[in-house]
Image: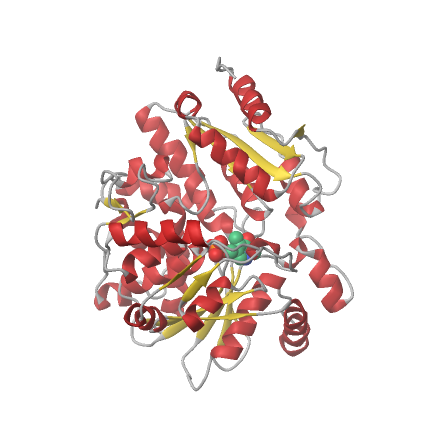
Amino acid sequence: MQYVSTRGQAPQLPFDDLVLTGLARDGGLYVPAAWPKLSTAEWRGLRGKTYQEVAFAVLKPFIGGTISDDDLQAIIEDTYKDFRHPAVAPLKQLGQQDWVMELFHGPTIAFKDYALQFLGRLFDHVLKAKSARVTIVGATSGDTGSAAIEACRDREAVDVFILYPHGRVSEVQRRQMTTVPAKNVHAIAVDGTFDDCQDIVKALFADLEFRDAAHLSAANSINWARIVAQVVYYAVASLHLGAPDRTVNFAVPTGNFGNVFAGYCARAMGLPIERLIIGTNRNDILARFFQRGDMTMEDVEPSLSPSMDIQVSSNFERLLFELLDRDGAAVTEILTRFRKEGTYRLDDARLQKAKAVFDGIGVSDEETLETIRKIHAETGEILDPHSAIAVRAMQALRGDSRDPIVALACAHPAKFTDAATKALGAPVPLPPHLSHLMTAEERVTRLPNSAAAVKDFVSKSLGLKVSA
Ligand SMILES: *Cc1c(COP(=O)(O)O)cnc(C)c1O
């Protein structure tokens, strides 16, 4: 199994090199050269298996022999052993054919743990085999930072530096980043916005001398290993609800398009997933695209679901590559125009191809709160605001279909106290394994909004001698 870039100019890579690469050298994202498929009989054989057993069957073809079966099995076992529900990702029934899959039983109670816990262990395995190290530098508006820190803490071959905007993340999110007592973990509060943090990270990656000296790598969802680990729970949910002999659909709260693209991969692997319904908040660029066919950038506005306060979804490039029949030059042309003009349009044939699978809807803060209240009253389930958007989208776009739809519940409601308090009158308590959070000692470095200051801090922490 080799991987190709969506821009068509970077060298093909095997899985183990890909894990350490992140962005392709031509600026594109890596995707498999061909989709691995399981036969109907193979899918049937996975029914009734554990999350870990399904994970092994789904991940193996993507890894393409770069990791031995025994090692892969051990990595998977270790990845999910401390998740706090025996099913790892339990399904709950909300209505006749309405389901939610809870993806918040990992250490930082957001779905990003399902992929990042795997990625952290992959880093260790691949780096040991190559006798190498990496330095993860990333910017976060909340959930990714804590999940990346938790995944990389105490890993021998990894150092991790996470930049967040000072005073602009929730207290739970900040404490999840600042209370981890591991020497290789560095939380950095930047005097600026999330965009400033992201610009600093980009500047460090663009500084090639520094990038090479520090062995910089990425843990955000441009890293293919994250997407592939997310395919697993689509397979687990589908098999539980009757696949491969019955159609199953999904509703996904969407920001960077990584999660829902994993659903597209599950479909490409041969699962009978007919529709992927996208829920967004008021930042509804994706919902508008699937309704009208034009991708048009607007300003990012804050909402009750901050992990989806985003305009440019980086993983959409992977779908675009498929819609344009894997023509890297066409992808490059469209995305260059988008960067310059803030808008592009797909022709009707391509749009129809996208709409055959995807549909989307924007959900307001008021509708989000209403959904939290309604589902709690009807079923007792408390949804976080992102999950509520998925449930709302599922119910709004079901139409006449009587097939099961699974809404992905991507965070625990305790993570977003603001929405819980507004909807239900009180915050939701943190799960017991996080009860220490509000009293644990914090460790954070506050830095000015300056790439030079961050570079200097990273260099000193790593013991590098790099000229400023
Ligand atoms: C990251 C995140 C999302 C968005 O997922 P993408 O893969 O970026 O589309 C949605 N909900 C929550 C709770 C998240 O943390």
